[in-house]
Length: 64
Image (tube, one colour):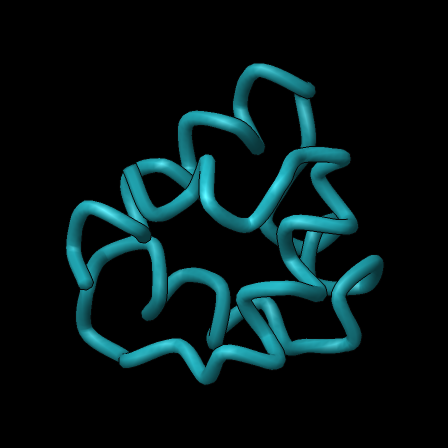
């Protein structure tokens, strides 16, 4: 799970988004994004797809 979080963070930073901004786009809290990025919280598949959509990437890219 930590690798997924790292990929989310990398994509978020590449787009100059703050955690709060990604959270708003993904209908999540900033705290949830932070926990996912640090690998402290598992991410449900539905949220993975929502985050991928918010980052304009395919979900599989976040899994690599």
